[in-house]
Length: 127
Image (tube, rainbow, N blue to C red; front, top):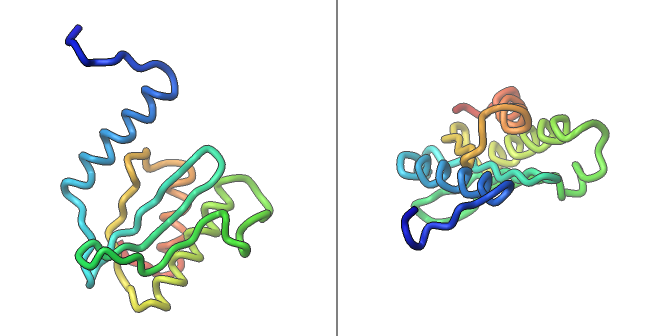
């Protein structure tokens, strides 16, 4: 075992793995003015989606399960993720964004992440 390396267990190991994957993804993905980055952040309880122009460093649109229109909604967490995906797509289109680059934030493309992406595609965002 190398010095300075901590052996992580349980949830700490999982969070470290997600962070490593996110760093690896961000090496290749960057948002521009023509095609900003759709970032998805997931916790155990909530999900947040932001459309970011990395060149200017501005958030163009955002939505989350903490918004009043989604909060307390019916259904499970996947249904709420679908609502967030449709809402962020609607707000992005209002900001003049037609196409985005999808950044899953190191999470697997399954479950709530896939539900959010599918709802955003159905609402008219291209990626």
